[in-house]
Length: 401
Image (cartoon, rainbow, N blue to C red):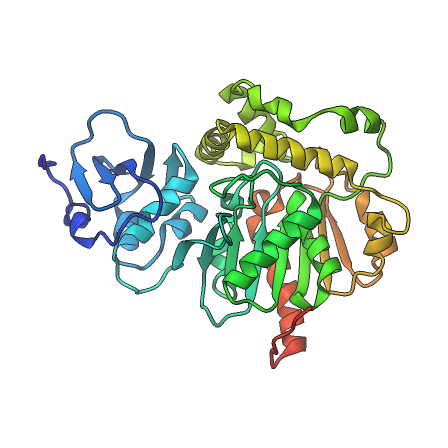
């Protein structure tokens, strides 16, 4: 192995601390202040070399933060949430780095990346927090991944056993031929709970994830302690393009060309009331992640099918979404953003009229992704909502439904 001059012992010792690859083989560029090294993780080993040639993922931080991570005082997720660590090339692969190595169990958010699927279905799942803490399932939105929760995950994990999943069809999960509608996604979420031995859980979802959270609560209320829906998708009463959308085939996205980087970044910024609140390197990381997934034609088909089903969600009638929502039993929190360009905040009034026990709030300064634009405020709302439910239910008993 080539020697890397002035390499800190914490980096040089990585091969000796290697536990095994969590994900696929990856070439990392590790940049600590002014020092850089290439870390090659293979299935059966790890090697550290000078920073030469191409790399797939770059992880950058300052020396003090790296020492804290190496000593176990914080995790890479903690550092990312605090804007002390930055990633290029793919957030998912960056998440694989830390669990691949032994490190002291001295504090910080401990997490694992596990497969919580069933049969040939692979559902990439990040599990963090105390195993005995009340479980909290996090569901991302359309086109997003579990990484959309990293801004608040460390603080939630101090109080909950947090389970953040890549919904099938998205992120690092398998992308089967499937319906990709709310009932199907809800069943997949219950599969994850079953695989992890969870009888019931609180569920939080953003956008499409919020719609899935509602579906889970409506289908199996005994397995859902409470829901929190952040700018959730819901059945649209006005659907002027209904006939056209029914005609369009999602399989056409198989040949969709690659989306230019600038276009992805522009569309991402539109999701926020004030894009200047976002750290530029966070935007870069999110764009990298989206483009990595979008290269897979199966992911594009899953995206199109999911989007189509959101639009086709039947609003009215005996089995329509809004009639079913009136029977929602579990404690529910709804947060809408007044500057949301995808889901109008006027849904707040409709939810209030259908779910009389729900707490519904509109944030006048927020867009479509509250957990990224206002992480502190979002954590406060979620912990307050779920904490009140847990306090009412103690001592906690297993439930089925």
